[in-house]
Image (cartoon, rainbow, N blue to C red; front, side):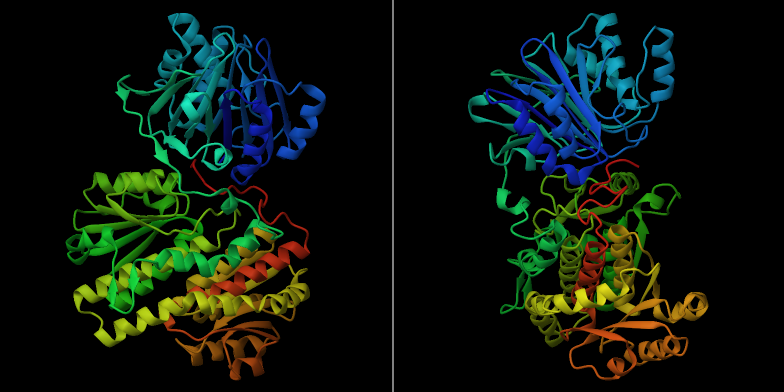
Length: 617
């Protein structure tokens, strides 16, 4: 959810914080703010709207000097998006200032207690309650800021990543996290420090970073370094500095109009990077350390439970087909947000695969904790190295998709399916559930997928033409069968996310059980009708739609004639194995959603009400 940025050092803080907020704007963009300390005064500027609006307001409100500062871009949880509810928030004295990502669940009771002691509140936020609680503790206990933060956080219930500054102690910043990510960049000779929700704001300044674990806090002192402690018991924690592998070019648009379009076109490379070193076709081997080291856990599992949210849940649905079809292991796919609340039956013979692009999804993290408490083995699949899910899992595999900035996931979906396919194939081979020749054929086809994605991307201009025809409709229906039913769900989600057009995904055979009532001459229906897998059945579904005057957009295999004769429009994808077809059929659906949203003049990379990484419930 929200993005936080901070700087302490010898450079001017303002441009670093503003540019950092722009890079984190995918995390929240309904309001933004900045606080700077110029050596004497604490200057705050904040506004409803985007970081660009903050820049305009800052020009009028503050002098942009100072070597210490914090900034925030917000995705609202408590309090509507407006100037007052924007972060940073000051304490009643004006000495303390805070930025916060997360939710303080018991803020109302804390607020009433503080009001009874004379505190007043300007905003509707839980964050203003937290900064005044810290101030209250600091005064009552007569302690330094770090200790006051620790005592206060032991009184709150919820999730947070925070940065707190005290203008009476201007050479230190206190940060802490629970359930929301926080990175600290360390400059040369500890003469400067950077604080951010992820490393992107400080990549051009340093590749050295410390990632706080849950329930840890750090006191950062200029020229004196970092001290990390456990929030609960005050014990010291060793500072582990990581060298970042991320490059600045990876988080820029690279000549594309939008990050989403760039990321759609990056999929051939992302898929290749994901199977590189793992898929050894000539040797007919799949090498994945996390699987090899835990092979007995997988082979002896009664079932695999996949937990995920959103697009990752759709990837999990594809994986259900792959694992059951190839490896003959029973699979259940669960929404992480529901899994944790319904008292699920889990035992030590279960393997739980948790999928998340960011590795920070709050509901998925909670599902992991529940599964581990029941003795299940947890295997994480995520994209961000060192993320919370990567650390919380017993083992796992990274997708190597590179940074995904666009809020609507694209390459996350295809790289997650790639990793899950590799796992399923490796287990199928270990179980003897697949023949040697069939195994080799799957490896060959998977190795060729990036090239075939490149071919699918060549339909871009044709897809844009189709998008222009249907951009003004109110509803879409997406239909698929077998492996491509989850792709229909994902295609509908993409359209909803970025164009705000209502769309539903259904198994094609379920159309007769309700959705067929919606079909008329104004309803476009996207039908995934590739040659492999239930083709004749899907053709029958198309005929049923045509008899009711529905408009058909068919996603078909190259050279198809039967659907072409029935459909109003067809978009071709190369032929591949049925189990790998989702990696191709999703490409035109991503492009269709993108072009419709652009033609409607929507903010493709930052759709309303959404944030990239859902770090709160």
